[in-house]
Image 1 (tube, rainbow, N blue to C red):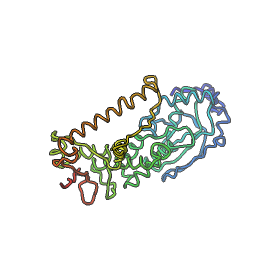
Image 2: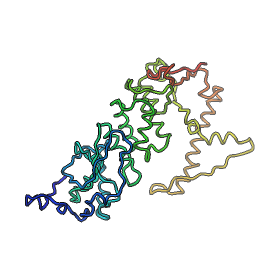
Image 3: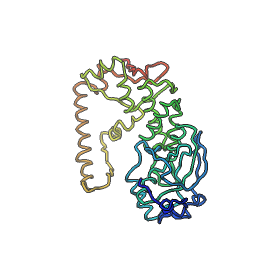
Image 4: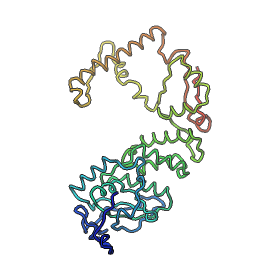
Length: 358
């Protein structure tokens, strides 16, 4: 950030707030009482709210944005610059949070960079005291979960990075902690739904197993998905992997039974309900037209491509059944197996495959 030289500094006299007035940040905005956004600790243990005051950017420290694993977003900064040029600084928005002991900017990196471009020497700071690095990190992430203004919400990679940090630091000690942390820092964004939080728990349980972490107490039963199946396979010591999956003799396919309804084509299910004297009428909608494909072109592909490919697939499958008197998954030589899911009785950590009895 380029240094702003005030009149007071040039004359070597004590600075006044008047020296920091700009077209975008006037004297009235330097009054803490003018900033009406409600501040809180977000319920995070180890965070103490101190005083609010106008502060100068050069007196604080911008690290690699404590609340952002990938730092600030240049496009977000550009949008903020345009907004400030149009609307000036708005006091109804949150202040910048500063660690009173270290001077670190906890959240406000985008405003810091926008101010450098616009020549705004300071901002309204809310000072806080953090008991330790974990409290500060949680607070920074929680502040990026604000729904009350146009914040850049935490995305899934941000959530994953944060939870891995908590696990490695011994701050997250059970599966419920994982889900609670996901909701705390992204409950207004990517982790609003319980299904997404459950997916993150699965992936974190897989991370714990892959890395031999023993400080997190896992529930007795664990579930899997496509991502955790890959992790399970990579750590497996079961001979089944060599003898069946990697033998190269027959295809293998992982099925997540939680998604059975979407894995088996619903069209096939509906078609199978038709009596011999009936047929199936299709009512379809398509994605919106684009520069590459018109609405008519998208509609033509429904029956000309998608249903045509489905018909060919079914014909191939029926040909297999005609030859072998069974479907591929019913063949007497199949060696089906289940992924271990019971931490008490099965080798989940070791990647055990429970073979289906014939």
